[in-house]
Length: 226
Image 1 (spheres, rainbow, N blue to C red):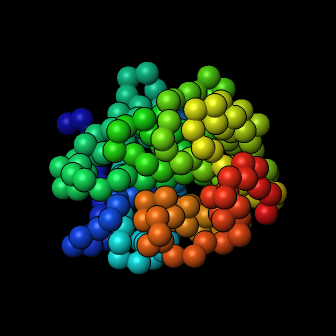
Image 2: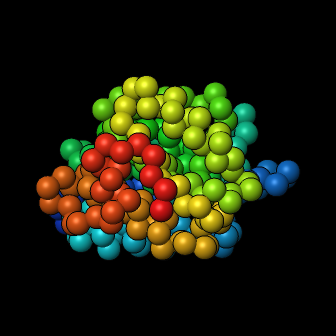
């Protein structure tokens, strides 16, 4: 039987003001395999999702997406899974704005799915991107957070894609100088910046205070190093 994507609820308030979808990464490593709940790239996003829920203070519904397959290939990409998940969430939360938070290939999927009319904010954490990746994200707020010691997802390519997207929308970029791809070192910073930015965009004046780097991005500063 073909694997299918799954939505895992993290927090489901009765009357949320926004909905957040958290996307994992994970390469296929040659053989095409279904996603499992125990793979490290999936487990790593658990604290990210919990941080978004905590910062949202009961005003954000938060879900994790489990893709059908690991990696990214021509037959099926995480973008299709993300589009599926947004459609399912809209069935329950028809009027609430959506925020996407993705790591690695999940960051790429968030950027390429961000043109969905329901999406208002996109956060890409150490995104694994191609220089040709582009999407019309006009009207959204976008944040990249990338570790400069990432040896898996190129920081230079991430910066290039950010500059391309910035031609049509507001994009901020936070550099973490000694951050690495797995977001284990400075993991709380990666998670906090993603959560604060998402809450600020989706909740507006009802959002809690943010840290200095996120505040600088929200004020219009495009390139911030912490």
